[in-house]
Length: 337
Image (cartoon, rainbow, N blue to C red; front, side, top):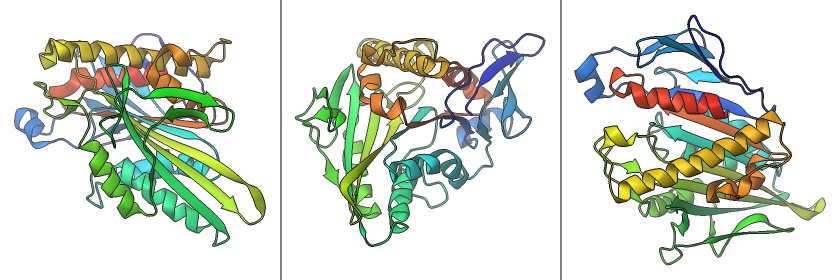
């Protein structure tokens, strides 16, 4: 059962939501980097309680208590994160159950190729192709990858720059789909890696004072996994959507202005819409789910609701240097998980 809440010591619990059994909400604290160590040595804002809860010192030097499905501290291995958070979604896709992995905050590259530091994106691909082997030779698989970004409320194809205003459509056979978006067939992990590099190089990236590689768009990696077997005349299709949500920097700290400020407004609007959809799904108290309030939530409609699995990974720095952004990320996870 996915859950999250924040409590200030001495106060009452201000929020708690129970969600679908298939949903997970996790936090990943990355190791300190050299610049953080120069400023604060090994100091962090975290007091770990266990694998699900911790205290984080807020702006007023008070301890805010957070609790999630799983907390991965600085000494956690990347493989632990993938096994807990992504593996159930990978297994679901191989059995025609859609799933979404949302990544939010300040984390390592989703495409880090170091075997130990390898990010979620290549691990998801590895998991898909390894999982296919267990079905035997009588099963035929087709895997296709679509990469798009949502920038200033427009959907851009990261494989074809000429497709910069893709429309979202729906029909009974395909469900929600991106009309005309490039679908790259991938037969193995190496092919997928080449596609990732090609698409990621086309992302809209803006330079801010805080992060020279700060993403100014939501990036979506959509894997369509089709299964055909000799014993079943009908093919089955599962989908895995990995969403790298735009950075959580605040305008006053990043020095954002002009176009970058407009980008931030667009990002905040779509994040708010995503939160509203997730809250509507988890509380079960509303009849209408506002998927159409943003491009992001509309694309994710059949991978968030219904018989689907969802995981949110909040990536944070443990350092006092980025305490404000980390706290904002944690509160995002607590509110919308």
